[in-house]
Image 1 (cartoon, helix red, strand yellow):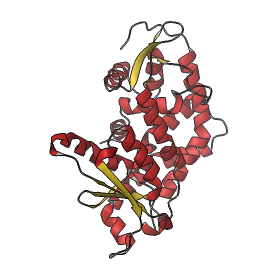
Image 2: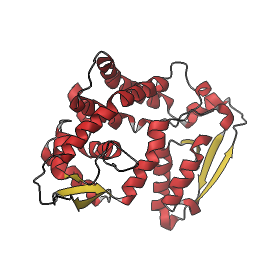
Image 3: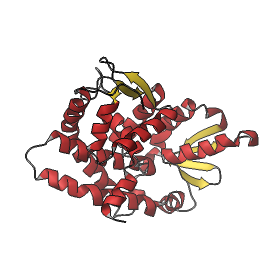
Image 4: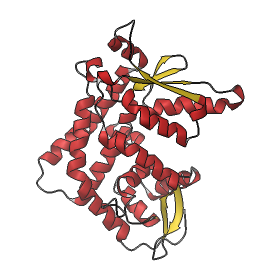
Length: 293
């Protein structure tokens, strides 16, 4: 697989659209720099075109996101067909902001949160939902039916399970690991650290050279900033969920997570605002598309 094919496999049109709305599609008084209203279909085609996505792929991805209830059809003030975020999608993006942009450092003294659940057989689909949601939150598996994460994820976990109406099936506990294996050895069982490290290294391989190129530039052209920032954010936003932010004493000495977070943070600081100027220009231009996808 070529580098271009690998990038296309990672950055799917649907993922890029979600990333765009997360970065620039939630404009308003409390979020300056984003699109102030629903994004016209023609603007989405232009914005995704800057990332190498063709119009049919954009329309297909928008249709799938609409069916999933993440995008809703609207009209701009000028009457152009447009799409905005559903309330559920806004909540999902807001839930992700702290994890993606905050990355709180866990301390060993903070302890752990445990999730134990029991789901009746007639509701086994909720069992699958619970497992997938806990995994996506970054939980590891301490034992069959026992999931574990750093304690700083307690509030986010509780909020997520309540929002999905899964709380009645789950007991949450907080505490410390008291043995018998050393905690670092136990953590290596609870999480696939090699797989997580590989994802960090893949991010660094793709985006550390991008940061180096921008560090040599004096100007920050908006379209180029938008393109590189969206690709970096699209790759990065999954990593803080795969990697729950384990305390550093429990990780291998060559753990690449800190460096990956630094690279993304510097790209965010360098490119996000300039990218917003391009996104606003694209969404504010004339749009003739009258129908819906």
